[in-house]
Image 1 (cartoon, rainbow, N blue to C red):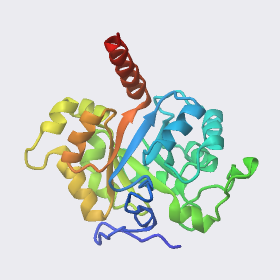
Image 2 (tube, rainbow, N blue to C red):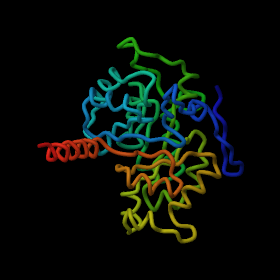
Image 3 (cartoon, rainbow, N blue to C red):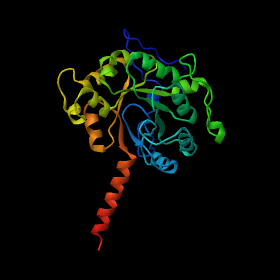
Image 4 (spheres, rainbow, N blue to C red):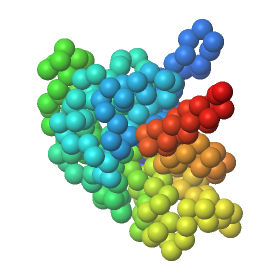
Length: 277
Protein backbone atom coordinates (compact mmCIF):
# COMPACT_ATOMS: atom_id res chain seq x y z
CA UNK A 1 0.00 0.00 0.00
CA UNK A 2 1.55 3.27 -1.14
CA UNK A 3 1.30 6.08 1.39
CA UNK A 4 -0.01 9.42 0.03
CA UNK A 5 2.56 12.05 -0.80
CA UNK A 6 2.49 15.57 0.57
CA UNK A 7 4.52 18.56 -0.47
CA UNK A 8 4.64 22.13 0.72
CA UNK A 9 2.90 23.20 -2.49
CA UNK A 10 0.20 20.56 -2.47
CA UNK A 11 -1.38 19.70 0.91
CA UNK A 12 -3.40 16.50 0.86
CA UNK A 13 -6.05 14.85 2.97
CA UNK A 14 -4.50 11.91 4.76
CA UNK A 15 -7.70 10.00 5.55
CA UNK A 16 -5.74 6.79 5.28
CA UNK A 17 -5.41 3.49 7.03
CA UNK A 18 -5.06 4.89 10.55
CA UNK A 19 -8.22 6.91 10.17
CA UNK A 20 -10.04 4.08 8.40
CA UNK A 21 -9.30 1.88 11.40
CA UNK A 22 -11.16 4.26 13.70
CA UNK A 23 -14.64 2.73 13.86
CA UNK A 24 -17.61 4.43 15.44
CA UNK A 25 -18.10 3.13 18.97
CA UNK A 26 -21.52 1.54 19.46
CA UNK A 27 -23.21 -0.03 22.44
CA UNK A 28 -22.71 -3.43 20.84
CA UNK A 29 -19.04 -3.09 19.96
CA UNK A 30 -16.53 -1.00 21.88
CA UNK A 31 -13.62 -0.49 19.54
CA UNK A 32 -10.68 1.70 20.46
CA UNK A 33 -10.02 4.52 18.04
CA UNK A 34 -6.31 3.83 18.02
CA UNK A 35 -3.53 6.39 17.85
CA UNK A 36 -4.83 9.19 15.66
CA UNK A 37 -7.79 11.50 15.25
CA UNK A 38 -10.01 12.12 18.29
CA UNK A 39 -8.62 9.66 20.83
CA UNK A 40 -7.80 9.26 24.51
CA UNK A 41 -4.42 7.86 25.44
CA UNK A 42 -2.70 6.98 28.69
CA UNK A 43 0.97 7.82 29.24
CA UNK A 44 3.15 5.41 31.21
CA UNK A 45 6.46 6.24 32.84
CA UNK A 46 7.08 3.22 35.03
CA UNK A 47 3.98 1.00 35.01
CA UNK A 48 4.78 -2.72 34.94
CA UNK A 49 3.95 -4.88 31.90
CA UNK A 50 0.91 -6.33 33.67
CA UNK A 51 -0.34 -2.87 34.64
CA UNK A 52 0.17 -1.61 31.09
CA UNK A 53 -1.86 -4.58 29.81
CA UNK A 54 -4.66 -3.79 32.28
CA UNK A 55 -4.71 -0.15 31.19
CA UNK A 56 -4.92 -1.24 27.55
CA UNK A 57 -8.07 -3.23 28.35
CA UNK A 58 -9.83 -0.40 30.21
CA UNK A 59 -10.94 1.55 27.16
CA UNK A 60 -8.05 3.86 26.31
CA UNK A 61 -7.44 4.19 22.58
CA UNK A 62 -3.67 3.99 22.97
CA UNK A 63 -1.06 3.39 25.63
CA UNK A 64 2.30 5.16 25.39
CA UNK A 65 5.52 3.99 26.99
CA UNK A 66 7.78 6.95 27.68
CA UNK A 67 11.43 6.04 27.10
CA UNK A 68 12.66 9.64 27.08
CA UNK A 69 11.63 10.69 30.59
CA UNK A 70 10.22 7.38 31.79
CA UNK A 71 12.02 4.33 33.08
CA UNK A 72 11.58 1.86 30.22
CA UNK A 73 14.56 0.11 28.68
CA UNK A 74 14.54 -1.79 25.40
CA UNK A 75 14.14 -5.05 27.34
CA UNK A 76 11.15 -3.65 29.22
CA UNK A 77 9.50 -2.50 25.98
CA UNK A 78 9.77 -6.08 24.72
CA UNK A 79 8.29 -7.42 27.97
CA UNK A 80 5.33 -5.05 27.62
CA UNK A 81 4.85 -6.08 23.98
CA UNK A 82 4.82 -9.79 24.91
CA UNK A 83 1.77 -9.35 27.14
CA UNK A 84 0.06 -6.46 25.37
CA UNK A 85 -3.54 -7.46 24.56
CA UNK A 86 -4.50 -7.79 20.91
CA UNK A 87 -7.60 -5.92 19.73
CA UNK A 88 -7.58 -3.26 22.40
CA UNK A 89 -5.50 -0.07 22.57
CA UNK A 90 -2.61 0.70 20.24
CA UNK A 91 0.86 0.38 21.75
CA UNK A 92 2.84 3.60 21.26
CA UNK A 93 6.41 4.43 22.30
CA UNK A 94 7.84 7.89 22.87
CA UNK A 95 11.44 7.19 21.91
CA UNK A 96 14.30 8.99 23.71
CA UNK A 97 15.42 10.95 20.65
CA UNK A 98 15.35 11.01 16.87
CA UNK A 99 17.53 7.92 16.77
CA UNK A 100 17.39 5.29 13.99
CA UNK A 101 18.08 2.35 16.31
CA UNK A 102 15.66 3.45 19.06
CA UNK A 103 12.81 4.02 16.60
CA UNK A 104 13.42 0.67 14.92
CA UNK A 105 13.65 -1.16 18.25
CA UNK A 106 10.28 0.20 19.41
CA UNK A 107 8.57 -0.78 16.18
CA UNK A 108 10.30 -4.18 16.05
CA UNK A 109 8.92 -4.93 19.52
CA UNK A 110 5.41 -4.30 18.26
CA UNK A 111 4.62 -0.62 18.76
CA UNK A 112 2.03 0.65 16.30
CA UNK A 113 3.38 4.19 16.50
CA UNK A 114 6.36 6.21 17.66
CA UNK A 115 6.38 9.71 19.09
CA UNK A 116 9.72 11.30 18.24
CA UNK A 117 11.02 14.18 20.40
CA UNK A 118 13.63 16.85 19.71
CA UNK A 119 12.43 17.59 16.18
CA UNK A 120 13.87 20.97 15.26
CA UNK A 121 13.60 20.99 11.47
CA UNK A 122 12.18 19.32 8.39
CA UNK A 123 15.46 17.40 8.10
CA UNK A 124 14.93 15.97 11.60
CA UNK A 125 11.37 14.99 10.69
CA UNK A 126 12.62 13.29 7.52
CA UNK A 127 15.10 11.27 9.60
CA UNK A 128 12.29 10.17 11.93
CA UNK A 129 10.18 9.06 8.97
CA UNK A 130 13.10 7.20 7.36
CA UNK A 131 13.65 5.21 10.55
CA UNK A 132 9.94 4.40 10.90
CA UNK A 133 9.22 2.89 7.48
CA UNK A 134 10.64 0.14 5.33
CA UNK A 135 11.81 0.87 1.76
CA UNK A 136 10.73 2.36 -0.54
CA UNK A 137 9.31 4.91 1.92
CA UNK A 138 12.13 4.83 4.45
CA UNK A 139 15.19 2.85 5.49
CA UNK A 140 13.90 0.85 8.47
CA UNK A 141 15.86 -2.37 8.98
CA UNK A 142 14.03 -5.72 8.99
CA UNK A 143 13.89 -7.44 12.39
CA UNK A 144 10.42 -7.71 13.92
CA UNK A 145 10.42 -9.58 17.23
CA UNK A 146 6.85 -10.89 17.41
CA UNK A 147 7.95 -14.27 16.07
CA UNK A 148 9.83 -14.80 19.37
CA UNK A 149 6.52 -15.17 21.24
CA UNK A 150 4.30 -16.34 18.37
CA UNK A 151 3.09 -12.81 17.80
CA UNK A 152 2.25 -11.14 14.51
CA UNK A 153 4.90 -10.45 11.90
CA UNK A 154 3.77 -7.91 9.32
CA UNK A 155 4.95 -7.73 5.75
CA UNK A 156 6.85 -4.58 4.83
CA UNK A 157 3.78 -3.32 2.98
CA UNK A 158 1.48 -4.01 5.94
CA UNK A 159 3.87 -2.33 8.36
CA UNK A 160 4.24 0.73 6.15
CA UNK A 161 0.47 1.13 5.88
CA UNK A 162 -0.22 0.82 9.62
CA UNK A 163 2.81 2.39 11.32
CA UNK A 164 2.36 5.96 12.54
CA UNK A 165 5.14 8.51 12.96
CA UNK A 166 4.34 11.46 15.24
CA UNK A 167 6.91 14.23 15.51
CA UNK A 168 7.00 16.50 18.52
CA UNK A 169 6.62 20.25 18.26
CA UNK A 170 8.16 21.35 21.55
CA UNK A 171 10.54 24.24 20.91
CA UNK A 172 10.64 27.70 19.43
CA UNK A 173 12.82 26.34 16.62
CA UNK A 174 10.28 23.66 15.70
CA UNK A 175 7.45 26.17 15.85
CA UNK A 176 9.32 28.52 13.52
CA UNK A 177 9.44 25.86 10.81
CA UNK A 178 6.29 23.87 11.65
CA UNK A 179 5.00 24.28 8.09
CA UNK A 180 8.14 22.66 6.66
CA UNK A 181 7.96 19.86 9.25
CA UNK A 182 4.30 19.17 8.47
CA UNK A 183 5.07 18.98 4.76
CA UNK A 184 7.48 16.06 5.18
CA UNK A 185 6.22 12.88 3.54
CA UNK A 186 5.34 10.23 6.11
CA UNK A 187 4.72 12.52 9.07
CA UNK A 188 1.33 11.47 10.43
CA UNK A 189 0.98 13.68 13.44
CA UNK A 190 2.27 16.88 15.01
CA UNK A 191 2.48 16.08 18.72
CA UNK A 192 2.61 19.07 21.05
CA UNK A 193 4.96 18.88 24.03
CA UNK A 194 3.44 21.71 26.07
CA UNK A 195 5.99 21.82 28.88
CA UNK A 196 9.12 22.09 26.74
CA UNK A 197 7.34 24.32 24.24
CA UNK A 198 6.27 26.76 26.93
CA UNK A 199 9.77 26.74 28.46
CA UNK A 200 11.31 27.42 25.05
CA UNK A 201 8.91 30.30 24.42
CA UNK A 202 9.48 31.78 27.88
CA UNK A 203 5.91 31.23 29.05
CA UNK A 204 3.84 28.68 30.98
CA UNK A 205 1.57 25.85 29.89
CA UNK A 206 -1.45 27.72 31.23
CA UNK A 207 -0.49 30.89 29.34
CA UNK A 208 0.14 28.84 26.21
CA UNK A 209 -3.38 27.40 26.43
CA UNK A 210 -4.91 30.79 27.25
CA UNK A 211 -3.21 32.63 24.37
CA UNK A 212 -5.87 33.52 21.80
CA UNK A 213 -3.90 36.21 20.01
CA UNK A 214 -3.71 36.11 16.24
CA UNK A 215 -1.15 33.54 15.09
CA UNK A 216 -0.62 32.18 18.61
CA UNK A 217 1.57 29.04 18.85
CA UNK A 218 -1.17 26.42 19.30
CA UNK A 219 -3.37 27.94 16.61
CA UNK A 220 -0.42 27.95 14.22
CA UNK A 221 0.26 24.27 14.88
CA UNK A 222 -3.40 23.25 14.52
CA UNK A 223 -3.92 25.31 11.36
CA UNK A 224 -0.74 23.94 9.81
CA UNK A 225 -1.77 20.37 10.59
CA UNK A 226 -5.15 20.95 8.96
CA UNK A 227 -3.49 22.41 5.85
CA UNK A 228 -1.33 19.30 5.40
CA UNK A 229 -3.83 16.69 6.53
CA UNK A 230 -1.97 15.83 9.73
CA UNK A 231 -3.43 14.89 13.09
CA UNK A 232 -2.59 17.08 16.09
CA UNK A 233 -1.76 15.32 19.35
CA UNK A 234 -0.42 16.36 22.69
CA UNK A 235 0.48 15.36 26.22
CA UNK A 236 -1.99 16.60 28.82
CA UNK A 237 -1.48 14.15 31.67
CA UNK A 238 -4.72 15.00 33.48
CA UNK A 239 -8.34 15.05 32.25
CA UNK A 240 -8.75 18.73 33.17
CA UNK A 241 -5.78 19.75 31.04
CA UNK A 242 -6.94 17.37 28.29
CA UNK A 243 -10.18 19.33 28.10
CA UNK A 244 -8.22 22.51 27.45
CA UNK A 245 -6.26 20.76 24.71
CA UNK A 246 -9.46 19.67 22.99
CA UNK A 247 -10.78 23.23 23.16
CA UNK A 248 -7.67 24.31 21.24
CA UNK A 249 -8.18 21.73 18.49
CA UNK A 250 -5.71 19.10 19.76
CA UNK A 251 -7.59 15.84 19.26
CA UNK A 252 -5.21 12.95 20.00
CA UNK A 253 -4.56 13.53 23.68
CA UNK A 254 -2.74 11.74 26.48
CA UNK A 255 -5.68 12.02 28.85
CA UNK A 256 -3.83 10.83 31.95
CA UNK A 257 -0.58 9.27 33.04
CA UNK A 258 0.07 6.26 35.23
CA UNK A 259 1.06 8.42 38.20
CA UNK A 260 -2.17 10.43 38.04
CA UNK A 261 -4.27 7.27 37.77
CA UNK A 262 -2.51 5.74 40.79
CA UNK A 263 -2.88 8.92 42.85
CA UNK A 264 -6.53 9.44 41.94
CA UNK A 265 -7.36 5.80 42.59
CA UNK A 266 -5.76 6.00 46.03
CA UNK A 267 -7.48 9.31 46.78
CA UNK A 268 -10.88 7.93 45.79
CA UNK A 269 -10.38 4.80 47.89
CA UNK A 270 -9.35 6.85 50.91
CA UNK A 271 -12.36 9.17 50.54
CA UNK A 272 -14.69 6.19 50.42
CA UNK A 273 -12.88 4.58 53.32
CA UNK A 274 -13.15 7.69 55.46
CA UNK A 275 -16.90 7.76 54.95
CA UNK A 276 -17.43 4.22 56.16
CA UNK A 277 -18.65 3.74 59.67
